[in-house]
Image 1 (cartoon, helix red, strand yellow):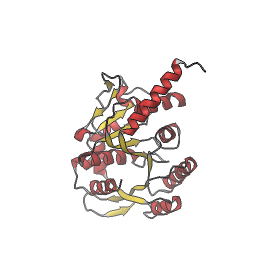
Image 2 (cartoon, helix red, strand yellow):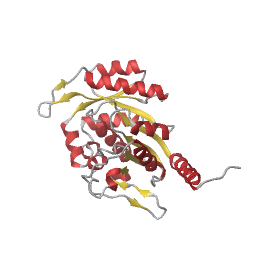
Image 3 (tube, one colour):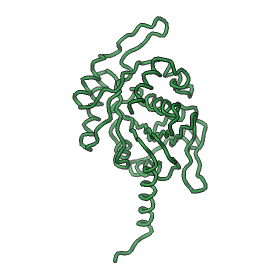
Image 4 (cartoon, one colour):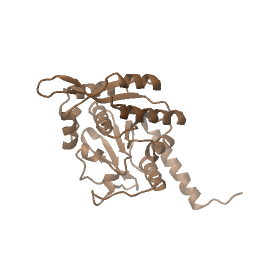
Length: 270
């Protein structure tokens, strides 16, 4: 009989806690992209906000450890997370009961740089799942930094039923990097839920004229090559950007806005 160490017991406890936590969460979506600057966080925040406003129990996890922005987008930049009586990390709570976990809520100095290498990042992300008091959730949206590094890889290896939701724009630069991200998912044998085309067209706030910023057909071709559905086409909208900076998602502040309507249509198919 082999000797059981304290480390073995600790790993066993963490696996049990992780299984219990994930078992209490319904649908899980990893919002990701191979390219930065495509509005991925805006999409993730507004999707979570839309589902919460519909009355669902929703969580939003920010696994961007070096550039977290979810807290700011929800007006929680000054909020803190703490340990509860059960020594579980208590999520911050936004409107409609939306639960939020982010490294930002653990930093005493909000401008502090998180200088972590792979192993420490992997451990932190796993703890955000297993050691946070998520409770029962209908949906958990996970906002990931761009690329195919430790953060999205850790999520996909930790959460077997997390479905990747890919975000792109119509630019050739974005499409090329997102194609690589689809190949990353293919290697992991994790099919994406679909593709969201963001920021490929613009609506003038004064005259309402629609202007293509990129090739509107590019996302459709990319989705076809990847073998996934194109779930939504969202405009580049100044109001959505301002709402994010002001800490209240557009889907809450202006629910009848075109961007909000498109987000709610997307949320309806998830």
